[in-house]
Image 1 (cartoon, rainbow, N blue to C red):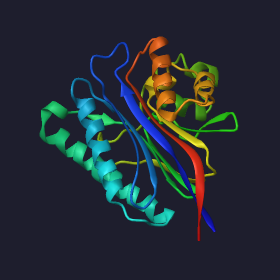
Image 2: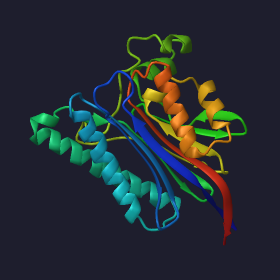
Image 3: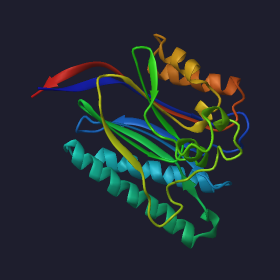
Length: 253
């Protein structure tokens, strides 16, 4: 006997208070197999390069997910690896053939929930969180130079927020001919899942995020509250959020 969770999801992006373009993309959806897919792409490269990269990646991955058949998690993991390679190639080849898109790239964090398992995948520094029983836990690992320095013991945690290297990415989608990603399959027990770009977590503390998620508001209202809080705290970057909240489950044999 296995459980398949039912729930409500919401996603939104916002330009913030400083940027002149919005390079963030966000989506939350389900497919005919009953799987849940959350994704954030935060583009980089300046001008129209970042929004090209993030939109290309998200549109392709969302379209591929909608067509995906019901499979066990190990095959879902393989499907995602192939889909990411194709998205990476689409961005990279366009950047090589068209100078307008030279150096275009994007972060990509996504979560696929299948029954009592979830697949967490990350490229770059957008984040995935799990919220339940009053606790907010970061599931993804930031692929930044400052995070590398911390993990290798070269700097202390309290130095990370002020390091001049804190925005330097170690990985992105579309920058190189091939791509790599962090993937992990974790148990899923009905927790809320929040994905966001750095425009949220750089402007809203984890305690503030936790306070919003603890309210009785609808998921779309929680997403709007988080965006409003990020902008109230400076809105220093685009803000992208995808959010899932379970409300029950079905039992499947």
